[in-house]
Image 1 (cartoon, rainbow, N blue to C red):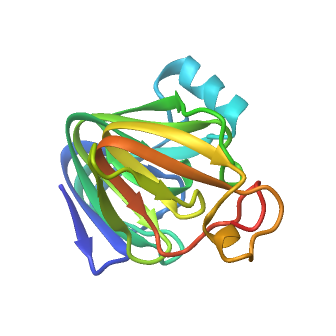
Image 2 (cartoon, rainbow, N blue to C red):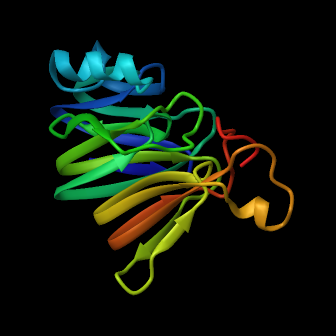
Length: 210
């Protein structure tokens, strides 16, 4: 159902089913479609309230019908992730679209340096289906194994999946190693077995110049 038109446009073929996408991200469609704004982006009232409290608020729309919809956002690169009953953790600002059958919500991820507006919670996508992630530049998928943990700059982090444990460490990041950091700095350490998605560009964070 999800396919890429180039690297920056998502095409979704609908045959009476639906897709959930970031509000305002549709750039074109053909066929017969109906559109519905979904406040909150999570499942149920609890998801909506949690998002408002944590800054993970998302404006989401549901598109349903027959035909093809095309989605894009600020010329961001798009990556497709297939879920098979597992859970994806993703920054709200990096989530473009999901199959309507996938469940979305929020999860507490612990104390963190955090990207601006993301707080202590992150968005979860769970079930069987596809999700489309956005990145500033082509995303890189890094494997984490018990033998090889991974350190990630929070400004470059997009998403992760698998059996991973997450720790937020203060006082050090990649730029402080070179003497270029300013203010309090953070990095994320992943341990276990899974995949981490990172982008080759760093968003501004609350912890300083990361």
